[in-house]
Image (cartoon, rainbow, N blue to C red):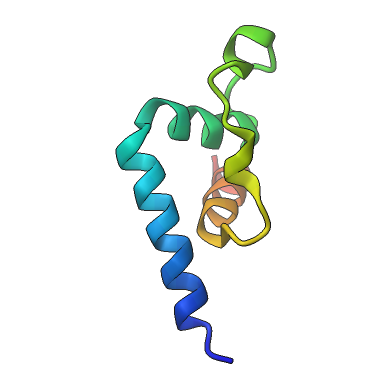
Length: 69
């Protein structure tokens, strides 16, 4: 099986979430990459459904920020 359709689907999901709800998507990335403080007020902006197993680029972005920031 080729990785191209899987990565394309992940890219489409990432771009769709960033375009449709930019504040929630960015806050989710920053929250899970541990760049935002862990409190209840900011956790309301986090969309936990973005972290399913097939959203590979979203997980890559979170891990990249966690390692290199």
